[in-house]
Image (tube, rainbow, N blue to C red; front, side, top):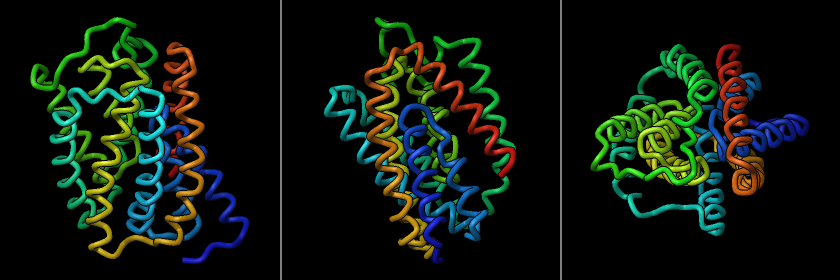
Length: 252
């Protein structure tokens, strides 16, 4: 579909904000999806088209985290396999089912994460020096990664919080490295889901390109904020992003 000039500016700005939020926390798609639908895009097309920007954003963000030496790769393969499997099945479900059925789950996820960050911050942001666990030693992480992959493949919005809960909460990576690994996961299941949506001819490519401009700018800003900001500030940003994502989900 075609957008007017001011609508393109709005899309780029919203995607920029979403890209920064996704890089540091999660839930940026809760801003982009309602914007696309308000502008007249069908929900299933909005859900698929948004993945183009997410894909490009994740490539840029992962590259930046790696450049800053914040990407831990020692157990990355074990993290990616269950998450990719979940993403495949979630994407297939999204291609043939209405995404609206997950809205209550999305809102519930936002509320639970807000309470977790507020009252148990060490769960999503372990203290410096905490020993990292391997996936093979942590069955709860395996289950969490499968669930997060399915959810991300299905609807994307809010999946960052589920990934952080698995990577930081159960595997005990610090919040910056957890975000870096989270974005590698996002890249993998977005690649899987995008292939499914292309197969179903649900992607509006020009609109996805417009979103990508904002998402890339937001990714650059988000990585710099994540790398150079005190972890305590990042926890409060995560809390604020969770509330924002939950509010956007409720009104969308």
